[in-house]
Image 1 (cartoon, rainbow, N blue to C red):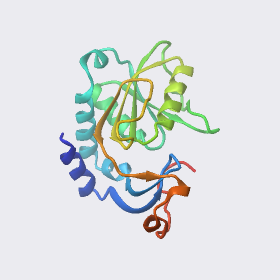
Image 2: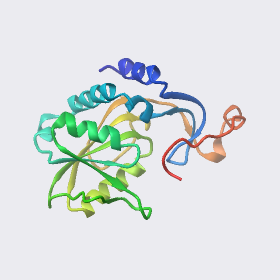
Image 3: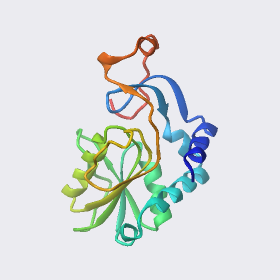
Image 4: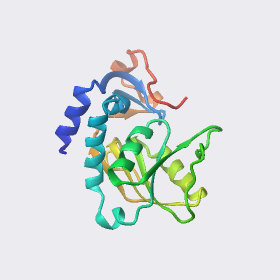
Length: 192
């Protein structure tokens, strides 16, 4: 899929929002990608996961044992990646503020893992999830995401393959432009 085709999927599902949003990273933006909306149609989610799978080099694909994603945002696309790659898909949760596998999920020692996210902005959640996989006995070989909002600057410590790169500006709370500060803020993400 081309970048325009992916953005068309976001637009068609009403997943590209405009306003004033506080992102999970704590930064503010005039745009928000509500990936849950673009993934609510199973056929669209499957197409996006298949397109993500095509981004991965063969040597990584051939080495994978499992797919892991962080809750909440990564669950649907992680599950679809598991289906597309014919691998088990698990998700991490933060019951105490730190990611853990729960619900009976477990990685075999040394399992080679593909981390799957919906959107990456600063990479904080991804790095925390990658560290959790290591604590659980696995090794993350690479990460895929529907959207890279970092302008290509994020360093996850593993190869990163986003479906699209989007360069919507983000701002620290004390750097808000007047036009954005004048709009009431919405916090649509899954983090408090």
